[in-house]
Length: 150
Ligand code: RB5
Image (tube, rainbow, N blue to C red; front, side, top):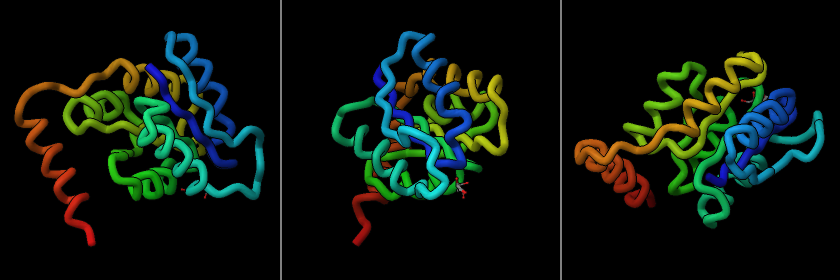
C-alpha cells in the first residue's frame, strides 16, 4: 500500500521510525516532508500535503506526526475525504480503519515512544474497512455531512 507520511518539527523525531517500519512491512512511503528538522515549520502545511496526496490518488492512506497528533488531525480533517484521528492505542488504530474508514493516522511524538509508534503503524496498516452494511451506512452519513457544508 502507498502511505503518505508527514511530520512537522514536533513530530519529526518519530518520522524516520515510522517510515522505516512501513518500509519493513513492504509498504511504499510517499514522503510529504518535512525533509529535515525545521523548528519554524507549521503542522497545517504537512497535514495539507498528506491529505492532498490521498485525494490526488498518490497514496491510499497517510500518517501524520506532530507534537501531540492533535493539530495535525484538526488540519487534515479540513480536507473533504480525509478521515484523520489521533490513536495512541492499537485497538483504535485498527478499529478506526475497520469501523470508521479512517485514512490518516495521527501520532504525537511528544506523547509516545518508538516501539508504540511502530505497533500503531502495524495495526493501522494491517486494518481494512469492514464491509458490514452498518459501517458503510455510517460512512455514508459522514460523507453526507461533508457535502452539506456551505
Ligand atoms: C509544534 O510545536 C506543536 O505545537 C505541534 O507539533 C503540534 O503538537 C500541534 O498539535
